[in-house]
Length: 66
Image 1 (cartoon, rainbow, N blue to C red):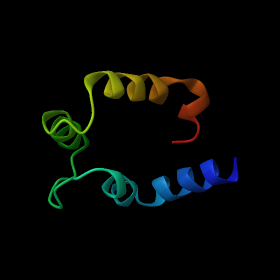
Image 2: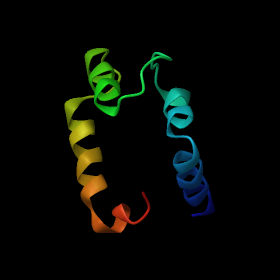
Image 3: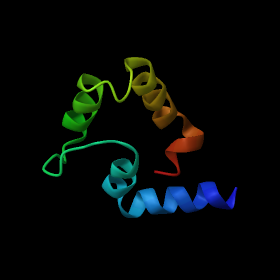
């Protein structure tokens, strides 16, 4: 549980750093929609993964964290 809370804290402080650890995102990209489109176009994520992440974002339990 502490690890999850630490990850959330790190993500809040610098979301791009966390994303760039896992995904290949061009340095000049900072628009969330462009980043999602790039990840989809490059095959790094699927539409299903994006949809699930959006559902989580709208979940009241997770909404308070972000």
